[in-house]
Image (tube, rainbow, N blue to C red):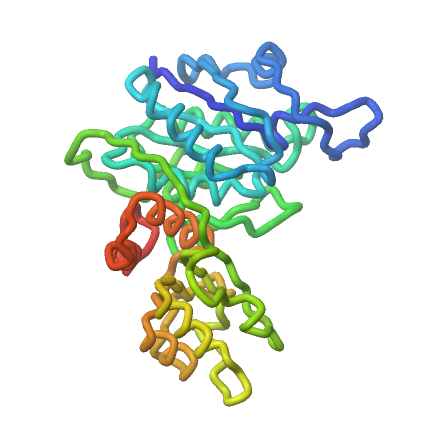
Length: 334
């Protein structure tokens, strides 16, 4: 029987309802192993399941140092288990899954993130199904950091949270699902054996800013004069990567000054579908010509966590730029 380690980080799935709470309202995060086994009978029939609590946090409190702690916990016990399931809050699950995807090389085992929209203690919970599916998935050969939610499996660094109140909370807008649970489990992705030895190198430098464009934004308020306070900017531009370029706007000039001072600029889009194309409009072409990087079809979560990872692992700006253009962990198509 396969050995699976469940790592608890908190979130709605581990919350217990207080008697004063109404049905569907969340309580405090409080994990009890015996209660967990009672609520999900039959889990040990799928695999030999063990668990480890790293922390019990609302996922809004997640930090890059917690990503490192989680990656290190998996690496430390990598040889003991056949797969890993991470219980995590849904709000930043896609961020953490993206971050961990860059930490591992030559992964040969599944790292499956899951959680729930409703606590396990609620009679209408989606937690049982998500957890059972995730443990089953972790017994298979799927060398991915992935998200298993509402009978679908998504590549972690392609996923984003779309719904607050629907059980179908996640999607990968620019990538097909890896698998779907129905009467049978249908796996759509084909995997080759890893060509090297498993390696883990967690580390993130959060010295960046995420800027979301809006009409009337003053670029002087958001674009630093130099890279001392932020080594990189990820800008969620309009449409295909368009930015204000008219004579009354200073965005291009301010970005040019920032890049000339040693900063790195990535242009992604507020639109979640399709590729960023900096050639399409004047604003995109001008910012491309001064050295901004297009994000392709990466999610914002992947752009930010990938850049944090690169800033921690490399100092040379040219290496960081080249590595960002590369597809490191399946996060971009081209």
